[in-house]
Length: 528
Length: 100
Image 1 (cartoon, each protein chain N blue to C red):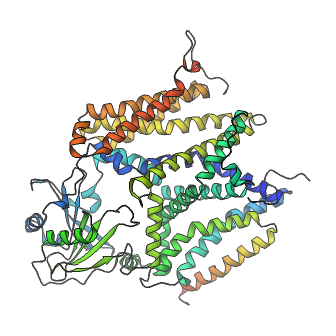
Image 2: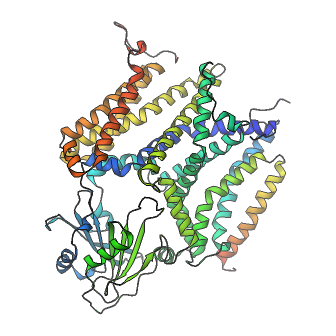
Image 3: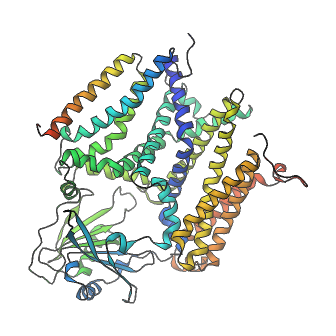
């Protein structure tokens, strides 16, 4: 397809190889966890045992908010946020905006958690970070999502690293296209009657070519998110707003209405939710009331991304009269090309633009990208095996990361279920992950590369088989409960985890190399 | 002289290529990108210049990086990148000193 001159082609091949070798293994971790993150919410619900997915905003909230406002300090009544907790309770966060000594503005308030019976089950005062904190029931989801976003490296360095990995992925994708002389022929070519090296190259080319557009989109959108979070917004504020971040935030989220001292009863919140429900055609996800209890109150109601939609939709209402004031753009106060573009980028990165189907495709293509990354590294190393024996350690490291990463996450999952009844999941899920990684690293020098791969495979299969069993053993809902609640996803994830374990373990079945010889210690030897 | 693994023929040429495609492209990308909000139209929301610039960062780098690798004449890629860097650097300087 492309016929670069020989010198440039050779240079592109070198860049393609080196971009994978230098950053490929970390990139594999980011892609693998990104693949899981496509179903992060479902995995979070599965692990926390949540089968009732109804929104707390489906029930009447007006009288609850009125009662809570009566017992809340006036300084916290400027703004109110309503949402559903992972346990299905209603979260109501009354908060105000306070100017600190240095001139910066902070939020502080009180958050109530109200159950289905209208009883307050939790009340906590402080900043948003303090009152929302880390959710113990979502610790497993947080483990791999944080690994995907910032590799558990503190901000902004973690985001900078993942942003650079995104750029490396773009380079691999672009150079991958440029070095293909017969792109459309190679896309369908897997030679069966050939040696293993050629067959692996064919599989790498086919998987890489089919997932090429996806790889480029994911790399580009991932870099955009990472760099925007890490330094993009402050840098833009510095140039476009002369360093005034407050002015920029106001431009991004829209300027709030001027506060008023005139009190007003306000429109019924349940009527507003019903009106929003009718406009959107779906259940509300959150509600935000600005200048609560005043005659200038403004209510925004947000809805989840629906199948076929690219963006989450938010509708505005007059808080005093309940009158519909229009749909809010994703960013800013007016619809714009930039806001639409950012929305499209988000939908393309998360793959949620066509419901479960698009996310399943994104998951599959993520798996293909993991395969392409690992086979690319293996091919590069295999070509140099004869003349550069000092690179054998990298072959072993590739095997360790390839199987060790999912295994460590699975061990984190085991730790999550074991500590869920104790409420210690936030710490122990991470400890489990680190212990898993530590034990794997301790085994590396003791085993040959092939034996290491087999042991890690077997351990991963065992951990995966154990996860649904542990989920049930530690109080998780069974299939009858899921059926009764109409939650097919919990059953689907149980089956997917067990099937994955069987697929991973299958090559070991009857494999002679896995049987440890009697009276022989397992010692390190040359990699096969 | 034998051609190196990356297609260059001189060690000096290899180093020059990587200096251009590495540090020079990186600095040029960052300066070009950070100046973008000054010339990209703001649009009806007043935010298009910021949002479009944020989206452009990975693309600017990718275009400049691959150009620097594929350009046969190294001096030409260096000159173009340097011109981009200087012109945007001057705009950035005037922005912060208040002259623009």
